[in-house]
Image (cartoon, rainbow, N blue to C red; front, side, top):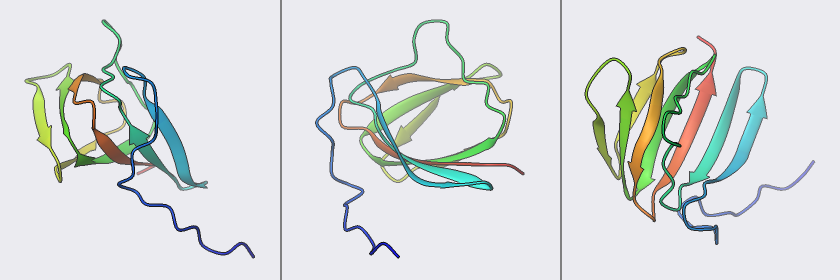
Length: 108
């Protein structure tokens, strides 16, 4: 048995500006939990996520704007969270350089 790790979720990685760093914290057949450091990255122009699983995402630090193809942009601040249903097309419109997320992907 491996002892628990003592990593800090609020610590920022030393990623490249404009490029996301995604670390899978837990992978299980029922769900995947990711730690995401955005480094100011937004979705490429014209790109939309269209995921097979529902995603619950919480912004732990910074600010961001999510855009859905069905409506207005959603402004997020630290502590805000949202459930994005499976097949709900969305994108990251803007992200602060210090944006830090937890994302839980699961099948309903």
